[in-house]
Length: 485
Image (cartoon, rainbow, N blue to C red; front, side, top):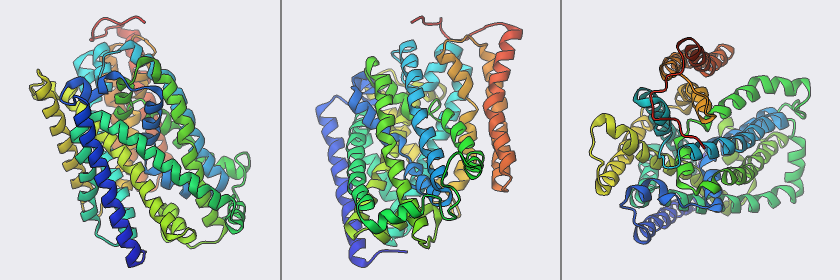
């Protein structure tokens, strides 16, 4: 499904203008701030305030899932599906705000999540957390690229491989210039654009009778069975979707270097407040997208691809200009996450990977150079993955969530100042990661119960092993002396 030729041209022009605006922002940041220093390029001199932090976190947290999955779940599972996507996301950000503030007080001059773990548990634990962080960054960047180019291909008919280079080039253009500050500044603009579209769309949904009628008719999803989260059908949705979504999100934030970079870029007193405000901003978006899923279900709309409920419904019920605005909203959400991932990799490359590759980061000039190399290598890796024949988002997410779960609990306990044996953490995390290929195999073959068990094992085994190892062998922390707050 593609739009008319005139609209395709409008989409292309809109993307071009978007790219030029954000390139100008990168140039502005480089001119106004001394981006050629380590603290500025990697953590914006640790001076980001509450509002900018909140807007940046909200924009970064709006992955393609917030725009697409929320509508798909509403379409398939009605109110129950929408609830079990929106509520866990909101709670996740609120709870992590507390832990984020603790982590920053424990390690006020840090740069990355593996760096945080190295401070308390040494180089071996740092290495395993670095491996996980880099793998997640590459897979996340590739996933966002695939999601973005799929939408652009639907709207224009231009081959996805061409769009992949365009989208990546847009991100690289301003991140290489301005570092994390450019990422945070563009995040603020992107979230405002997203909210603008939301507040334009909401009245068109709620105050146009046929759209509102479709929402009410579709609140039970395409089958009409899921009108309550407390019914038997609602319980089925919780078991099928809500439980694993909640578990996945619960661990998502702790290993997410994009969020850790923002923790270290903010003023200490702004960290928790920034996350609380971000949760309130974020939740507006998936709720609005869920309404589109209700409309598709309630109107009996034929959806060619349930994963694209958002864009197919928008094209069907809104004027062309609104459809184009939807494109810019989707592009903003995807690019915000992509530039955050690129910026996060720059910190990982400088602070952690450089030690293992023996890279010279002794001067600010070398730091920024190495950081930029890291960004470019991320882009190359993601482009290779995105353009691999037959590649699908599913294949990436077969590994993504379970790998992320394997490091969560030892990190959480460290943030709570619980003293664990460092070797126990290393062994536990490696054992947890062993469940990643098992989960991928089960999920790919439709054995969802077994896949869920594998994910739970990846989450719980590192906790059990690290705690038992500590009780048997005693507390031996290989990092620096524990910092009291």
